Amino acid sequence: MKTIEHWIGGAPAAATAPATTPVFNPATGQKQARVALGGATDVDAAVRAATAAFETWSESSLTQRAQVMFAFRQLLVEHEEELGRIISAEHGKTVDDARGEIVRGREVVEFACGLGDVLKGSFSDQVSRGVDVHNFRQPLGVVAGITPFNFPAMVPLWMHPIAIATGNTFVLKPSERDPSAANFVAELYRQAGLPDGVFNVVHGGKDAVDAILAHPGIQAVSFVGSTPIAKYVHERATAHGKRVQALGGAKNHAVVLPDADLEFAANHITAGAYGSAGERCMALSVAVAVGAAADGLVAALERKAREVKVGPGDAPGTEMGPLVTRAAQERVENAVATAAAQGATVVVDGRGLKVDGHEQGFFTGPSLLDHVTAGMNAYQEELFGPVLAIVRVDTLDEAIALINANPYGNGTALFTASGEAARRFQRRVRVGMIGVNVPVPVPMSYYSFGGWKDSLIGDSPIHGREGIRFYTRPKVVTTRWPRPAQQIAAGFTFPTAG
Image (cartoon, rainbow, N blue to C red; front, side, top):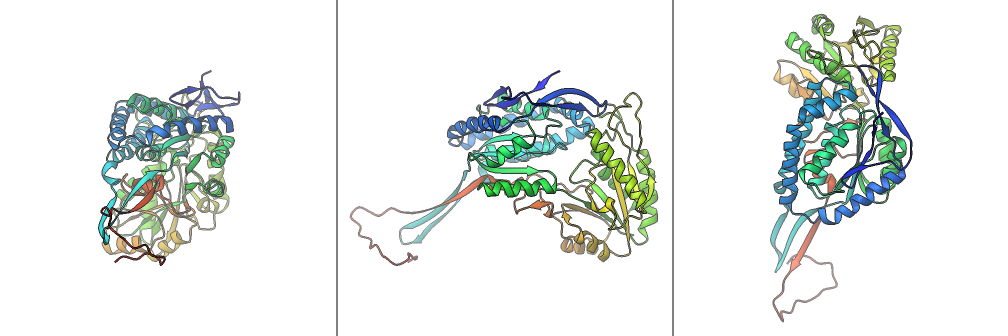
């Protein structure tokens, strides 16, 4: 069986220890490969390669970096189908969905292609007599990314292109559940002309994570995952003097007002809830039906949930694939059972779904729960599966209060025909990313991605200009060029402009 190795110093690198873990095909339930489980020694080897590469890469011109990014971007276009199938085979999502995440990751590469303009500093002439001031930003050094299974291409692409384009070198620790995309991207970087050691991949679990958080040669860590692990990463990394981006979990609400087009809303909520089997941090997991919208919305959502085509991710016509692991499948189906026991109405029950020819796959169908309350587990927990809970409220103000009381604040959506309601909603709701008649409001690459409350630990969102600020630090230079023999008095008082 194939063993997926690390990528260090521009080439595949065997692990220093024999430990591995299986990589499954979620559609069949079968092991298809093994991935190396790296530890402190492997992380140190990657950091040493990245440190050596930083000496020259940080001194490379903006033109050289842009040329690499343009070439890398083109390779992502040319290999989109191949990379999409790699992701689908290990994650379970449909090939089209995988291609979509590649496109959204590629947008960050396109943003990185233009960093020459974004990185421009400023200059102030004659701030004092014969004195000028200017500023510029410089890279940090070796930085690292720890990324989740649900977007094995997109989330890392939200990190390393900006880090590399600003002159840093990078160590990626992808999820061990679907590791092959990271190595494929490393090979594309090599083909794009990126010098050896600038981009490295270390596979593994907690040992690799802890080694990254503690390594003195790593200056910053970017993380996306669950809130408990985000808190752990933030605490450990900051304790070791590192900058940290730590994005956590979510419980995203879609509010539907009575004046909304219910068919439109139901279409988009269904896609937002069940796309990628609900394994998205921006998935819609709660539909908040306001007043008279409730019964019509539930009827439309039930019809559409029953129409979702579930099957292998590489099969034509499939809209929703399996969950990533057997444990995830069991957890989601247990959550539906718990919701029923706590008094929710199971309108559509996805438990026990079997797909012909793939009976051992990690499949579960879409589930729709009505009459869910804020005290139920189905509302409080991030289920990370194809389960949509419906909460009924009387007014928009109640819907806003419900969202604001939730500990998560990643994304939310409002379906309405009222501009006044939309404006009130977007100003009052305590959430980082908001969609108005847009179910999954993932910002474009030139805006930041990040939530509020327990969805973002610390204060550093990801990509866009926030990414540039995170991966660089500023320098301010004050200069004077006196003429020969010019006498300028030196004072012992604090300097002021004059």
